[in-house]
Length: 389
Image 1: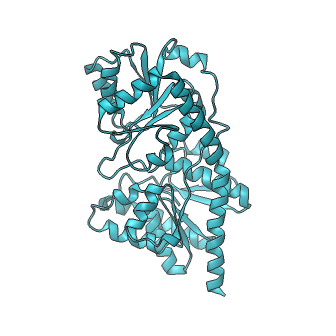
Image 2 (image 1 turned 135 degrees about the vertical axis):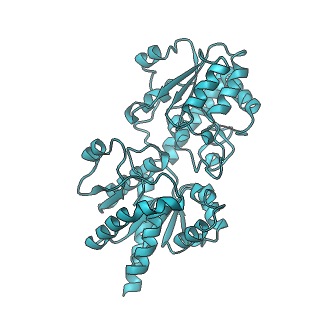
Image 3 (image 1 turned 180 degrees about the vertical axis):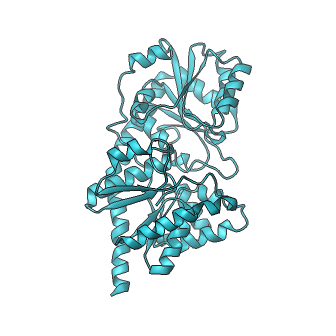
């Protein structure tokens, strides 16, 4: 159960899709994904939903976790309860605390059905300052048969709030190295974005403050004097778009910055392969933080070195000095220096990109994540059978 699922944007949604897809292929078991309707869901479900991997949708995702939004969960709550009662599910997995985690906790107390919780870290940091949500959050995680932490950052936050380390299993995101791999830049994209003879920086991310687009623009104000052929491609949409466009105009960066907008998933590898350097100096914004950063792995899988922020789980996705660099996400000067150094040092870029590619292929297959999830499920079901006996 998850409040939003593909084709809704977001690394967590890609994580759930690939994790459970690989698990069904490996285990032969069946999964029903209970989620909400998002733009494009009909076309996605028509190609992805089947008997082994069934997608059931009702209602729309919650706009926030604020209490005034809770009346909107009444109908989805009834629909979910009905589905759970009508089907012989062995185990519930949920990807969002509200309302899916609340429903899982309630259903366990009603029926004894075990559940697995997922944690990316930001659901803890974002609720730390709330009045009542930490109590609900902690109860949900405490009563889970297992909590899957998507990063070391998430695992450490779970330990901080008192979750038993024996019930935490870390399964980091993977990357599809058949989709994301080094290939020659597509000539049509090079022509469309006027990239001939240019040094290309790239960010693929939602346009929200914590992704660091503004800091990159600040760094570019310094770099354009030193690197006249630099171009910055911004792939993605979001609430910061108008603000960023204004800054580009005010800071005379119109000839440098290209707002690409939304790019279909099938075209994302082609955009990574346009870049000389992937840059996303992620930071924390009011508890909202990068739990891992799958985009760093995707860029590395295309042989592209990366720059991330020293914040959240990025330090696990980016090995500083080996697959890329980590910088202070609030220091435009440090970011400009890191970008300038890598632009000037082609051999260093190639070294970082090659190691990142090797690591992505060696350590981050989705198939291995499916095996890990099967181990979690088997352990829980063996314990459930013992208790029932």
